[in-house]
Image 1 (cartoon, rainbow, N blue to C red):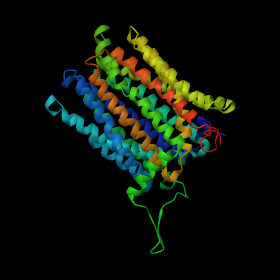
Image 2: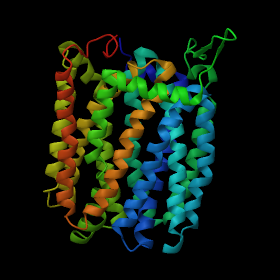
Image 3: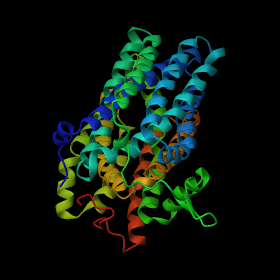
Image 4: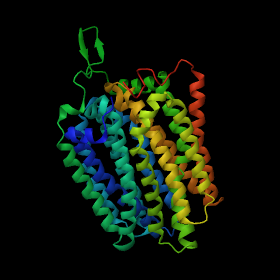
Amino acid sequence: MNLTYLQLLRGNRNFRNLLWGQIVSELGNWFNFIAGLGLVRVVSDASPMAAGILFACRLLPFAVFSPIAGTFVDRFSRRQVMIWSDLVRVVFALMFLLVTTAENLWIAYFATVLLSIFGAFFEGAKNATTPNLTGKEGLLAGTALMFSSRFLLMALGSALGGFAAAFFGYKAAFIINAVSFAVSAFSVWLIPEEATREKDNYELRITNYESGETQRASFLTELKEGFKYTVENHFALTILIMNIIWATGGGAINVVFERIGGVFFAAKENWNPDLAVGLLWTASGFGLFLGMMIAYRTSTVLDRRASHNSFIGWTLIVHGILFAIAGYMPSLWLFMIFIFVSRAIVGVEYAVQETMFQRSLPDYIRGRISTLDRGAEMTIFGLSSFFASEAVYYISPQMLTVISGILSASAGVLWFIRQSEDSKFKVQDSRFKIQD
């Protein structure tokens, strides 16, 4: 039986602390994102290349370091990794205050890279810890709450970040971001160390037959083990490939929102650029939040009908088509509506998919597999953002929106193909099913 949201929150103090830490830091992150994007736009004279570099600096380091971070958090204290990742990010967030001209724009890029790297370690530790804090019965609710709060903060944080940047300046947003990391570190500090791992989690992996003693496998060995598990496990590999395909289109959303809101509709309808971009992220965030919030009831229906396969495939296809249609909308408000609906649909899908994925992973290797998947997705996401920033020199942002939606929808097609390749694979299998 799956716990409801209220049951999990009322009965699990450790999860509440982790959730609160994420809420605060995510709010600060969106202040930083909107303000950083606006700062780069101002000092670079709205250069698409400058924005593309910022997106790449935000995404690619996360992707590159995720597999390393995953292995790290499987070997060492996940609690300590989260605390120290937050504390060092306090300093990096304040580095944006030094950016005043195009000549020192490199500082913004450098700070973004550092925030991204340590963000990968925090995310790896948090994702590996969450199933241990929630238990199997609370994992669906926990997954939905963790991601819905993130997406709600995408909505509120981007809107507030756009408002703060427009009316109080960029410095206030960067300071808020730094403070948020400190608050998050304190929240994680309140969680006991023993709560972050399973008691029977293995610690020693390779036997030294010469001495007869058991030793811990090397860092490189455990890193390779994560890759091997992903390649050999049909479900894990399916999720990995599907997320990569989705990211080929999903990564363009950064440039789409920047060009559609901050340039096109800002000029056409006289919007403040920072406010327009913030509103688009707000619509996206509220849509994803709504999707996560209805995931619990949706999963109940899926359990009765045993229709997880078709649900995941069709929701991915429909959400991408709706995003593509948004490219034809004549006003910012209509564009926002289609973005909202598209994101609500994929939000439900992601909650169901992620719960299935996390439940299929043993605790000892969860950090490596989840970060490998996330890292691969973010690699393509970052490359997609960069190439999208180059594409707008040759195509309109509306056409870029259409292409982005079609590419994202193709992830659903890939899902169906993978299912047909292995007729023995069943979502109802006890390793992958939502209802244990």
